[in-house]
Image 1 (cartoon, rainbow, N blue to C red):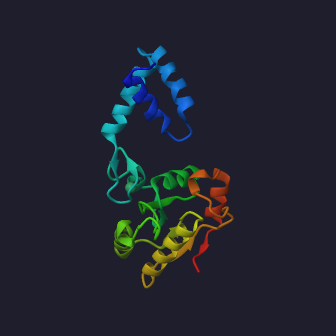
Image 2: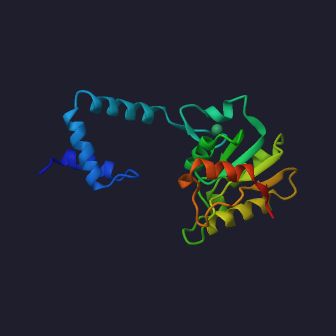
Length: 198
Ligand SMILES: [Zn+2]
C-alpha cells in the first residue's frame, strides 16, 4: 500500500498525455529508486519551468520571455501571420519549419456546444494586430474539424475590408484531423499548398 504522497504523484503523472496509471506507477518506482539523482533533477527542472513560464503578450505563445522567442526573432517574416487554435498547434507547425512568419494563438475554437463565443478567444487582439498594419498574409491554420472551420470562416469574415490576403492550410489534412497529431511531412505539405480561403 503506497503512501498518500506516492499515490498523489502517481495520479498526477497518470494524467500526462501518453501515460496511464500503469506507466505512471512504473515511472514513480523508477524515480523512487533514483531519488538522489533523477528525482532531484526532475523536481528542479519542473520548478524552473514553473517559475519561468510566461504568456507572450503579442501572440499568446508560452515561453520564458515576453515577447516570446518567435516574436522577438528578427529573422522571422513580420508580414505573414499564422493563426492557430492552441499553443500546441503553434509548436507543431513550427516543428515543420516551413512557416517563417509569426503566430497568433486564439486560445481555443468557437463552439456552440461548449459555449465558446468570439469574445472568449483572442480575436479582437488579432484584428488589432492586423489593423496596425505591416501584415500582408493571414494564414488561418485551424484544425480540420467542424468547429475549427467555423472559426476560420468567422475570422475570415471579420478580416474582410482589411488589406490582407487570407489563406488557409491545404486540407489534404484528414477530416477531423488535429494539427498536433499530424506528422511533420503532412503539416509541411499543408503549409506549402496553402490556398485562399473561399
Ligand atoms: Zn509571441
